[in-house]
Image (cartoon, rainbow, N blue to C red; front, side, top):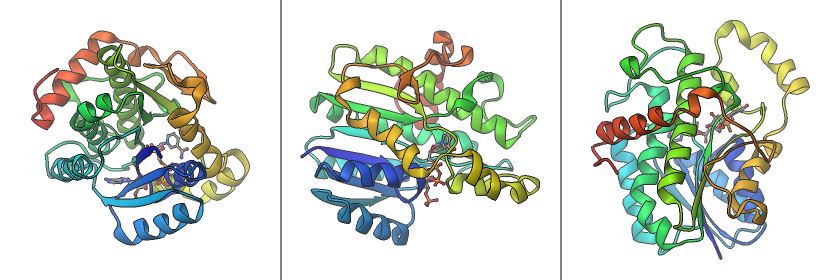
Length: 279
Ligand SMILES: NC(=O)c1ccc[n+]([C@@H]2O[C@H](COP(=O)([O-])OP(=O)(O)OC[C@H]3O[C@@H](n4cnc5c(N)ncnc54)[C@H](OP(=O)(O)O)[C@@H]3O)[C@@H](O)[C@H]2O)c1
């Protein structure tokens, strides 16, 4: 029985992926920040055939919460076969977390970065193992601006979201280089335009058209979940690492996400922001 840990498992892509992965009888570790939603998710994932279902509380935007989660995971699980960093959100207006980090960056990237780093030795000891980041097609056309990583100037929800996903792809590629030869793979993917709750945080003027757009143009959460489940367990991608996927195919990421110097700088900045020592 594999142990598969998914953040953002209380709704949308994370929850549907967990339900799909449960069918193989594996242990699903569902991570979320809302206990009531976690309980509902656990019931659904259990009913879908999971060999075991555990729930762990964590707000991935809060570093202490991620550290507590990592400690709990290391304490409870001798092996981790899959870590899916999927939790994410869209923030229409700028805010900062208790750690003083811009919320989009903290939620969509830095929390997953910290969790991955804290679990890395256990993942390596569990090899073959996989790490998956839920990124987005919206990373194209965007670069990180290290002079203003927190977007104090010219904040827009879309810019912050796109940059957080550039960071996820950059880190995926840098981490894959570090993990070469360990039997641990790391990949990022775009799930498609998926009709989930994340769109409900879009600006007010976009909301009236959202319902029809979701129904007509977007794929279902189940289809989005399939993309995550594919990278988590499919034998087809067992030895693929450091790649960005769309529709289960490797695709060249955007220029800003292929900048290896930016990736190294991001790793150093992220280590500093989270109090880790640089690899
Ligand atoms: N939907 C799309 O079209 C699309 C496209 C590209 C990429 N993505 C990415 O897909 C991932 C999943 O999003 P989704 O579309 O499935 O949206 P969703 O239904 O809103 O799910 C987001 C999940 O992340 C969790 N989450 C958000 N902030 C969190 C925090 N601070 N701590 C812990 N958990 C947190 C949410 O928990 P709660 O239930 O407590 O809110 C929820 O479980 C995100 O990374 C998103 O950026 C989505």
